[in-house]
Image: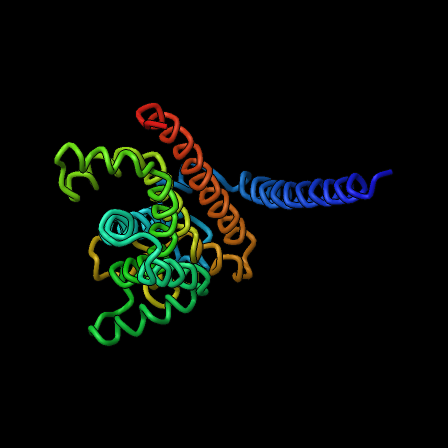
Length: 283
């Protein structure tokens, strides 16, 4: 048999094994969460706050963690959009292509993407001490904003770079300014990818625990102010799995199931929005 065919067969076999391994791990994780979390799911779990404390209380639900996670991830994502989008548009519309500035900026985002989330939590905690803030929803939003900034910016950048240069040149030829071209041409063409980047960043933010453990704090109550502590689903899972009471441990698996369902909804929404807006994209 030809040597190239043998190499191709070997690598094909390795790819199949790797794919099956990843799928098996994913199925195992989802099955564990569903099997252990589903029996604990009931109406009170998503409509009530914990009774008797999140660590020792055996009654109530996790409404505080659900809303806290949505507030925190939503606030951080909303804040990051207003930072990431201008950066990406400047990099792809105003800055010179293949310049040292663009190379260094993209390299910096890649490095920031790989920084552990606990480092962002420590950095956010340092900022909070400087500003005189206590553990609060605002502190968590600041830390998570730093965490999702490279994720959103780098994802948007890759999408915007795929916009054909001919469209920009045609816009300039018609007398449009760079600002008009950026928002009326580039953003419109890259909108499906931009929405996907936003949803990816939201999913990254809502599922992180390390960046908010010192910044957002934890509470049994629903946060009604940016300066009050906020519970999150990842921290609820972390704290409740450490309790000696089986009833509270079951609530942790219910939290994991709800968090998994939220991530699944985000993935489905990303696919639907991408298909809906792709029909307006010029290829």
